[in-house]
Length: 431
Image 1: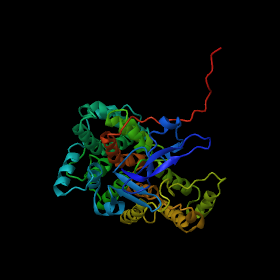
Image 2: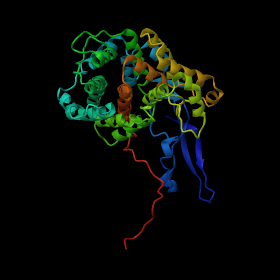
Image 3: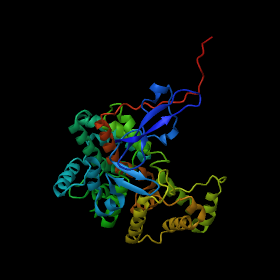
Image 4: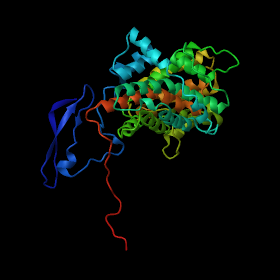
């Protein structure tokens, strides 16, 4: 952060003296006004519901330019990373700041691979859940429970402990997600296989069974690996902010990541791709492709209450750069699995066509976002809809743990304590 020559002056219409605040510049993006002394000098707070105009931290991990439709991990454009590297490379980059060389990649991959198994007691812990429990309910409990099994790496003041916790979380999340799926199906858990890639191993734990061999489809493997890359981090979103806020109290990393999982469960955040596919399935059950035009007209009617899921984005005011990559991946998977003529996928493509051609959606920049395509790809692979957000959690874990570690390394870090505009009863006595 660099101090700007400019300064911000706050003036008052009631005659109170004005106050100057320093302005800082980052490497890219908007400048920020440092208001840390605002309360001390004015006896006032700022009011910013949703933190839409507030920078709560410094970070060097991810940068988004919503107007340009740009997403950078450590300075690298997402399209280059998603097409030229695998998810383990991106994990190394997000955690360490640079892409690994050949020796570093071998070492990092080996570290993650050697931590993919979970304590056997977690299998018994899992049996306390109903088999029809939502996977995110199960995953929140499992991730939080890791602190009871791996308490030898929960000293947050020890950089070595933080590193081991990061590796453990990245390595074990696929195992936990696969366990949640297998448990819901009444199938035996499949142990990790060290000879497979991170993503290939996850696919095997999900879909293999003890009765026959499982061969990983390379097209599917690459598609899911790309989903992981595109969801690895996304700046200070709700779940990342939750992890930082939870972690600012000094809690252990497993508890902080469990808080992130719980936040991601919300339909306005990580549950968006699940909501998107539910929308398509509802449309398919109520007329299918012949009713798409009527449905899209209802979407344009503000009084109808009908929402178009998977289009538009809180941050991106242009095309979501991840969506372009996911669109191509979607086509590759559907072709490889001979699902191009699947009714639901045809329905999705018709919704997309209308949204990209209709002036109503184009003028409002309601382009397809990454959730629209990733849900279609996951359904094609065979992942059930209610597991989509757990997959998202798996991918986002590296971003959460990197952001958490960055916060703890920041000399300006303090426990989070937002202020409020109180509008309740003033002082009163009991009579």
